[in-house]
Amino acid sequence: MVPLRQTAGHNAMGLIAIGDIHGCAKSLEALLEKIDPSSDDHLLFVGDYIDRGPDSKGVIDRLLELREEVECTFLRGNHESLMLGYLNDGAFNLWRVNGGVSTLQSYLGSGESEIEIPEHHAEFARETKLYHETEDFFFVHAGLKPHLTIEENLDQNEEKVFMWEREHLGSDEFAWEKTVVCGHTPRPEPINRDKLILIDTGCVYHMQPGMGRLTAVRLPEREFIDVEYVD
Image 1: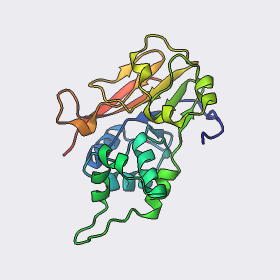
Image 2: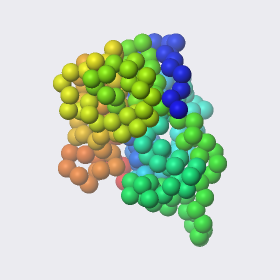
Image 3: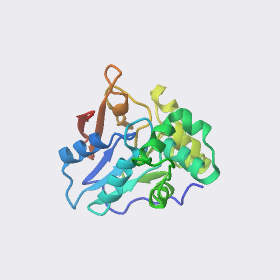
Image 4: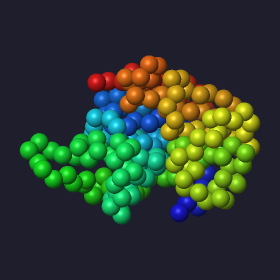
């Protein structure tokens, strides 16, 4: 169910969007140190906190801690959606082939044989938002249908679009009323176009040429901040 549409009351000053983390807890910490957020900042994470990387549990622990220190908004990525499918309905196959095993392993303590995801971590995933909107920007994990306006995308009420969409990456024209900021599809460099900003630079794919950075963007300045993968 897509929540009722709300536009944030404050402007975009101090708003910093952060790309896909994918269990790279040390890289997240390095990026936060580089950003050095103040109490006036608003950190918005575009989703995919878990899977594939070495320490998904550590990422969520840090994000739960961070939200006590600074204003945070956490969007839902397709990987959180897969995790919720496992937690709510026991659906594992699709999550497994998309990196879910590494997430479960991060919850396996030393000497323990059973894996248990703490309830407050499950609640974190359940509370993630499908999108966030300000006067100038629309934030979503994957993207939107490029030939539809943002209003029309929302009217279609397709959660799969918010979680998995990639059609906009091959488009030269967008019907969107404002700039869409997203992650989901790793690129060697951020995309910085009038109507599209993409900030997934493949931190977890550090073994692949050109990948391996965790990227944020300060808005409305469009100032990009990144760190290399930290092992």
